[in-house]
Length: 154
Ligand SMILES: Cc1cc2nc3c(=O)[nH]c(=O)nc-3n(C[C@H](O)[C@H](O)[C@H](O)COP(=O)(O)O)c2cc1C
Image (tube, rainbow, N blue to C red):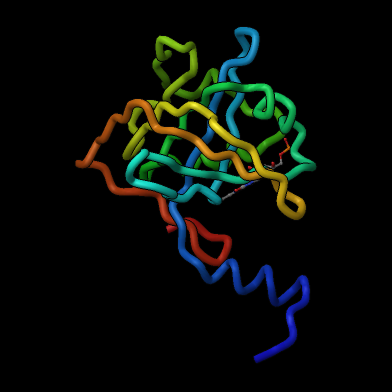
């Protein structure tokens, strides 16, 4: 074992394979979305999930003010969507989406979309953990997921 430092910590985390999500919300009729791979299931009953957002994120206050979000689990042909929503100012014009009753967007052709209510926020280290109750889901089981490992898409 090696003593932990920033380099080997980041390297170690990059060896954990994840899917990729876009967490999205509607704030004062403007759509926001962010590429997030810190998404995780949390509880089956009640149905809870979580994701964490860097405190330095330019959109932190938007998500902190939001009561609801959609979580969009990307499919294998949506690498461009992951790259788009990792930018400071993503372009929604190139994205196909529907709007839910709560006015949040859900991205089309994802493996799954989750309609969520934010029920708690926890400050931990340099991130804020958002705990969300899942209200509705849409699954597209014919599609394969976009996979992320060692900073590369698979
Ligand atoms: C594959 C991938 C996963 C990411 N996961 C997270 C995450 O879980 N939490 C987070 O705060 N940022 C994550 N990011 C970074 C954000 O998408 C975004 O690039 C970052 O917040 C900078 O945006 P800003 O310029 O608006 O501050 C991820 C980026 C990529 C490409």
